[in-house]
Each structure stands twice: as C-alpha cells, then as structure tokens.
Image 1 (tube, helix red, strand yellow):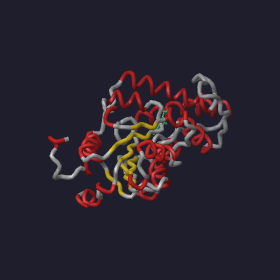
Image 2 (cartoon, helix red, strand yellow):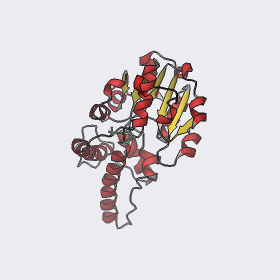
Image 3 (cartoon, protein in one colour):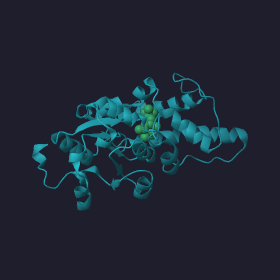
Image 4 (cartoon, helix red, strand yellow):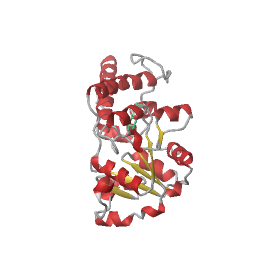
Length: 258
Ligand SMILES: O=P(O)(O)OC[C@H]1O[C@@H](O)[C@H](O)[C@@H](O)[C@@H]1O
C-alpha cells in the first residue's frame, strides 16, 4: 500500500475525474440488483413463451461484462446481444411495459427509482477522504458517470458540492456523446475543465470505465477493485489498482486539515 501512495506524483496532475457508482457511492449494487430483477423477469417470460430453458442474468459476471459503466440503453442492447436477442430500439420516453431496448431500460430505472426513494445512499468514506485531500491540494475534481440518476445520487449522498463539473447520462444524451468504453464523456469533462487529458486522472471500478480512461490518453487510470477484479481492471487499462481510495491519501496528511 505504501508503494502505491508513493507511486503517484500528484503534482503531475491538475484534475481527477471520478466515476460515481461503486467509486464514490455504494450504488453499483442497486444497479446490479435492478438489472437482474428486470432481465430475469423478461428472460423467464420469453423462455416460457418459446418453450426454452431459462438462463438467469448473472448479477456478477453479466453485470460486469455487459452493463457496468455503460449508458442505460447500451447496457440493455449489449446484454441482449450476448444472448442473441434483438429488440426494437424504441424511444427514450417508452413506458416501462413496452418491449423495446428503451422500454426495458426504463423498466429497470423505475426499480432504481423506488430504491433510491426508500433507502439512503452510502458513500465510500475512503473515496471522500481522497476527494477532500485532493481539493486541499488545489487539484480539481469532476464526476463522469453514465447514469441519469447521477445528480440525484450525488445530492442524496450530500457530496454534489465537492465536484466542479459533472458529465452524466443526461449530458451524454444531450451532446450525443458515446458512453464508456468510448473515452468521449471523460474527454468532455477534461475539455470543460480546460485540462489536457494527460494532466488528468481517471478513477473507475468498471472494465468499460478503465477502457475509456486508457482510450482517452489520460495521465493515470486508477482502478478501484471492490470485488476481486484487480487483474481484469489492470488488463483493460488501469495503471494501478486499489481496494479503497483512502489508501492513496498520504499518511502524513493531517485529517483535521481537509
Ligand atoms: O440507468 P442509469 O441510472 O442512467 O444508469 C446507467 C448506468 O450507470 C452506470 O454508472 C452503472 O454502472 C450502470 O449499472 C447503469 O446501468
């Protein structure tokens, strides 16, 4: 751990761009549970209709491979393609009961909405310590998330003010930016901050996210490994991998100062 702390020369960077779900807030779990609920109901009905066997959505493997970090409808399309299923695209305002890519995505989003309304959003304390310390060093911060729930989650977690810029699923849609693993949302954040990608750090827990960081030519890509995926994160673009971002706050830092 000490090695990692010493490995990063923060003076080389002017900004740190953080993913949200699973990096700052413990909300990746909410997404994966709701994807599973939605896809399992869909797959079960489809299998019964076709007299086929039902193969459930794997909340770990399928989630990470096809859905994690991606824009809502990209996740639906990509997972369905992995099962050889093609649905009409539909429209962003499709109601949840419509059997389209957008309808299925919105079906899952209704479930996320219910959980967010009922439960509190937890932050990862180590991540927040790192953000505070970075701000104290004069390093700027932004959030880059695929999620349209990003503003609500930041507010619920009480951390919205800690980030100077936010590129989320709404911004990506409005600006027609392709989602992760394409680097465009991260590059847009750097552009808005007026910082060259090589002067910015990307922090990600998703495979699609570290891929985006590498593809964008960012100065450093930090992988956050909460579930034993360190090797995959490194293979797909993370320069270093930590279990908790608090590991990166220097031991000499005085917690009372940030
Ligand atoms: O449907 P939303 O809230 O716009 O989120 C889109 C994606 O946002 C990402 O941050 C999550 O990793 C994915 O699980 C989620 O599907």
